[in-house]
Image (cartoon, rainbow, N blue to C red; front, side, top):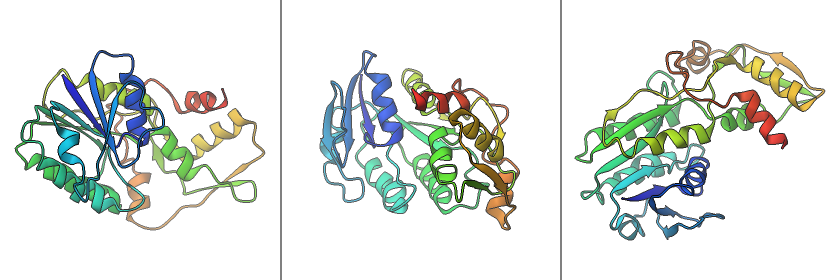
Amino acid sequence: MKILITGSTGVLGTALINQLTSLNYDVKLTSRRKPETPGQFDWVYSDLFSGDGLDEAVKNVEVVIHAATSPLKNARRIDVSGLENLLTKLEHIKHFIYPSIVGIEEIPFKYYKLKCEAEDLLKNSSIPYTIVRATQFHGFVDHLLLSKPLFKRYIIPGSIKFQSVDVGDFANHLIGLIEKGPQGRVDDFGGPEIMSLSEMANLKINVNNEPNKIVSIALPGKLYKSLLNGKNTNNMRQIGRVTFEEYLRQKLD
């Protein structure tokens, strides 16, 4: 069975490569840049938006894990238009695995709206698919919200909640879906704990022996309210194994 990993230089793509290295799958990688450590796998250049290289990337492939995404820039070009281009090349595909994000229809954030559009594109196509949503990765929460203290203060937006998950745990879950075949939308994959951002900041301070303090500020708006209400979590699907504290300690090794 030949498997294609799109977005092979991204956070999830890299985790998939690491997991697949020890497994007996025939794997092809594709992205605009060659991965620094592609392992034993073949890499093919492709550009989702222009379509360059897609024919070669999908050639002789039976399963696609679509890890390509661009949350910070060019999101529509990559996550919607790019997916649309890719789907036109996949009439021969037996299984398209699409990683998505928990709560995207209830959180008023532009990137999440685009992920909803992308899910709809796949659902309305003729491609046999599995969609699995995950909660935010540990690294996403850490780097975006806890990476730059100001005057030795973490400025925390109130008591918003996260159920962060280890990217390696999620990559392993996606690989486990390969043999199960297309299932449509399946159950969410969430991290092992639901914590407030303040609790996560406290963990980081304690693990790293930082002098930083926490300042919590409530914010206005629907986005803040949706996170405060835990729309980005699923307490019925606490599946991941690696906790946020374990992630922080692994970074010190």
